[in-house]
Length: 434
Ligand code: IFM
Image 1 (cartoon, rainbow, N blue to C red):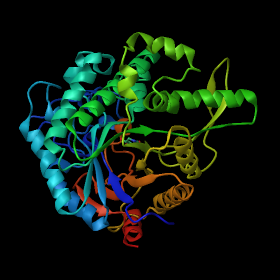
Image 2: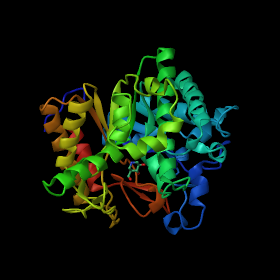
Image 3: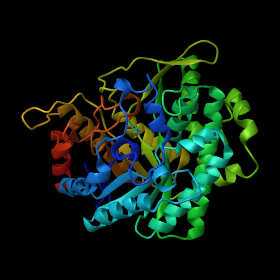
Image 4: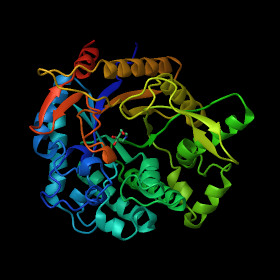
């Protein structure tokens, strides 16, 4: 596997999934605090109250990253720690935490990559309509400006939103994630407001003229037709429109996919003149989170259905399909390039067990090795891939699955908060040494 010398290898996490300290130092309530306390929403009623206690253990965690030998760490900032009420009064203690974290990373020679929004919206803003309310995009811009002003000299890699499809569809379309609302129209409206929030933050970043780069992270999944039939081909195109193009097209071309008329009608009232200029303004890079693919067949009029996985699956039930990463990178480069790309998340959950101080997770090592190989192939084919962040650094709160799905290359004993580098983490460490 050949990678350029300046390629960034990293690990990734997100605030609500690892920080804990949910009621400390003035942090406000987030939609995930509320949602995880709602009976039946999260497996076993787990919450992020303590999570990996990273808020208190960040120094130890950064030391562990240094031991692994990563170049970069992708983390997210909890908006309710900075603005407990979503806007208005700043919480200096919350801000201080991220300053200390960034200092610690820089002292260890690890480049910070900060995501501004990884799903923990201040609950007070949700009470005012959340991502269905256009004002939220402007509050997000103000929060982003604070972070750029406070950390813009030390953090040189910024991501506006993580996976807006998940925030919009899982949060407002089918209700599996916070805030648990379910209506297809709301999915589309939330998606538009999220994209607008991205565009406003991007504009603000440019105005500040800071010495860094900014982009968005999308969860993309290549869709393959179940057969060569015209029906399956068209169904596949719709699945791709729903998952991938609904975000890629506005960001890179300045309009929503025109082949999905009923979606266009639903979102139309919320589009205002100038929105697409903001949304499609040039970014410095695109972050891609890749986990698996879909195999799609036609079902009913204009409908489609995903077939069961065609190969081995992870503990999430997601098919392990490394070639999908290669196909995806080439397609994004071909259809939306040229723009530098980062894999901002890739990894796998397996039901790991700690046995005599060791976690043997050969499947995760194989998963990573095979996906790295596909990334190397894509680079060789001319894709401007700049870095790769393994999801995740630590086992953590896996949203609706609570702590029952382990993605870490470092095992966390949630009783004692002990961290144990898994065999996959040791493999990554030796890969990075070469
Ligand atoms: O844990 C999540 C992460 O927060 C966003 N991307 C997918 C991961 C695995 O489900």
